[in-house]
Length: 411
Image (cartoon, rainbow, N blue to C red; front, side, top):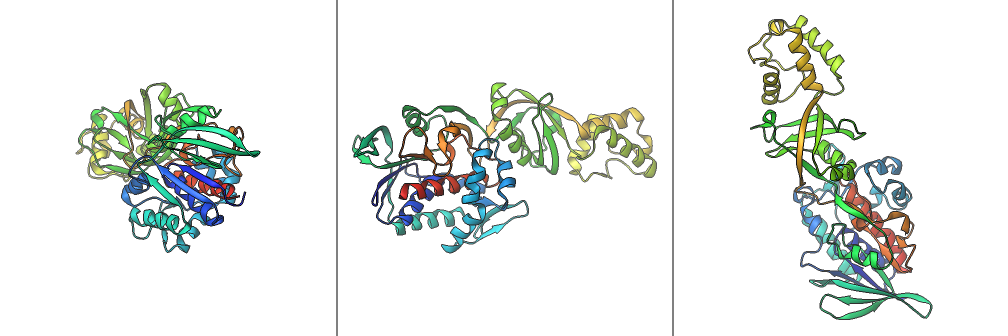
């Protein structure tokens, strides 16, 4: 089919990238993108605090897929076909340079998400993509025309149209019309639940410490395999930061199943264990007997937080190391390496809205992103049961799946 009529449902990163790829690959294709709201690329605009975390400087596919709690097996081959390096080059060719930050996240050098939005919109316009906003797709009927797959679409303004190739890229939240369409066309939907979220904790140990952060902690849920590490941030409502967000991603289903009521265990001083910490504290007591605990913090923890931990063990800030009893050292070792906090709920991370769940992956050909059940139907982005941890990984999955779908639909 030399001039297919292609419809993209969803004006996010994956939808735009697929539309641009399809139109650039086959200029004869008639590519139309439908976005139900008046705000295409809305998540691009707010990502990374308004800077847009475009991708991550992880260039080995086998390492890259380790950042995806769901979809890692399927994405391995896909990342060999379109990797973060390809994404960087794509934007560079169009005049957008990306920079690598110390944690591997990549942003436009302008530190402005509008740079990415304008690049995508300009590329779509140059390629001849027709973009319709405030107009979504309400219903889809699959049919066959002259032996080729085709679709009959009903739009939200009650108009109807026919297309030869259809891409669903509507995101993966519970209200996504794309999931309704996918299920109607025979696909199984893995139930969507939040993936990146922060923890509500009501604990006096955290009171009036909002804004304090620690560079490296380990977090986990006792009696489960859920454990990860990274920076931690104390907030007005509990705990956040990359360590918490990663844990929420890997534990999305388990934490939803317990209604976000669970115990969080934090080691504030990895790689120390309780035993090695006790030995270290005993040695410090011998080596620095006259130093006051409050004014000398040997573990580089924020001073206010260090004093709060001391207080929980009954040690005053003016206590000298020589005056700390063995039992108090043991208690301090406990709180430094294994403090338990009761989580009573969650909040969505303000910069991300990512869900676990979506179209079942084994029903998709990840070379073309085409449905194995409905020829001519393609999927890209978070409408699939794919999600990554925070750090640009969800956008990279969107660019990759959008690219592969766009190439396939151009044929």
